[in-house]
Every structure is written in structure tokens, then in C-alpha cells.
Image (cartoon, rainbow, N blue to C red):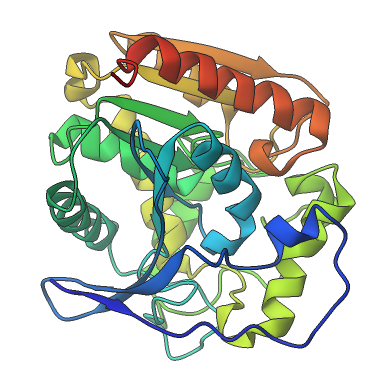
Length: 329
């Protein structure tokens, strides 16, 4: 399972605002390359080592995400002494596609994600020393919980940001899960579950579902314009069916109560993509969990929200890690 460095195209020249210098450029001292999974599949990875690291942090993105969306957050974490690593999930971003349609986010089984995560964690853990932290946003948060429950990862602390513990649906999760499972079993299971937006039946704009910050929202489109191969649209019916099933499985998984890793959960109560109540219920079952809640001021992407929300979220992360991870000697 090798790490391969690749050259990153920079795109056309532009005159960035100071904040864009962080959000719209790969840092000169960062590496973008590929990690090769046990079955030979290449997953695109990002590494940005800190000069005098207090530890290492693995950032897991959400469905359809690319790590470029979080460069500003990476810069903050690195400034706090964390060497940051991230990778695009198989089937999205720069990690190839699992569907003939490159704009459909498909996976045949979330077990594929589980296997990639476990293997990457093992390799990444062997690459360095010191405390290891895992941070998962949205779908990445669900995968972190699954891995903690399965004991396939062993971080010193875990952070869940708007975790996908339950999916929102205009017809309710139970009925939606049955429909998704029924449709996925008939016809082409790789076909798109809907045409656009982040969830079916939504009358809200995609931006309003994700963030109140227009500039940060525009970053994603900027990166996609520079690198069209990163663009991904709606999920497949199979992805959706397994998403509902995965959330339901966690509800009845007794291993959740045995997780000993200290966990920080950042929850947006007004989230219209994932179910914050399901996340809160799971948090109540954890042995060592801190929960920070946001109101109507925050949409789904807490770490890409307006400064008031984002600064509070980062302060909570910094405080949590200062408390649970030993200081550098």
C-alpha cells in the first residue's frame, strides 16, 4: 500500500483576496498524491505536516466532498500544531468512480468505505508517532463511528462534525429507507437517486442547505472549475439505501456503548441534510462525549459557515483537544 506523490495543476492565474490565498491554493509545503488500497484502487490523499507537530489528525470528508473545501480548516489545525492528512473516499473526488456515470456518487456497499478506512488508518498510523486524532464530517462522521464501534481504528480522540447518523427525508426516514431499498433492488442500482440539489423534494437552494457564507460556498465551484474531474452530483439509489440502513444499524448496535475514545460532537440543530436528533441520541450513548450545538445560525457545513459559527466550532475543537491530548514536552 504505497504513497505516490503527484503534480497538482494550479489552474489559471487569479487575484485572490487574503482568505483565498488559503482556500484556493494547495500549500507549497503540502503533498497531494495517492494511497493504494489493498485491492489496488488508488485513493487521492492530502498531507500537510506541521513544523513541530504535537500530533497527527486524519480528516474524513462527507459525501461528494473533496479535501480542497477544507483547506482553511486544515490551516487552522496545522497552526495549532497538528499535521493534517485527508483522503477522498473511493468513488468521489480524485479517487475514481464506482459508476459509469462520473457524476453519480455510487457505492455497492458501505463495507467498501469501511475497508478503505481501516487499511488507510493502519498505514497512516505506521507513518509517524505521537497522538492520533480523527475528524469526520457528515458521511465521514458516520464512518468514524462505525470504525470506532468495530475497533478498526484506535485514535486518541475523535471529532464528529454534523455526523450523518440519520438522513433527512421529506417523507420520513423509515418510509424513505423502504423506498430506496425497493428501487435499488430494481433496474440499474447505479442510477442517480435524484437530479440535483443535496436531497430530494427540497425547495431550499443548495447553498442554504450547506452554509450561510457565500464566499466559502463559492470555493467549491472554484475548485470544480479548475478541475472538472472532481465534480460529483447526486448519490445512487444503492448509496442512499445503504445510507439509511447504516444509520438504522447504529441505532441497535450495542458496540456504540463500548466506545471509550473521547468524542466531541458538533451538531447543527437546523441541519436539513442529516438528522441532528439522531446524532444527539447516539451521543447520549457514548461513554465519553462532549456535545456543542448550533442553532439557526448554522447549516450543515459547520466548518465552512460564517465566521461566528466557524470560529466557535474551531474554538470548541481546540479546547477539546487541549484537554484530551497531552501537551508537547
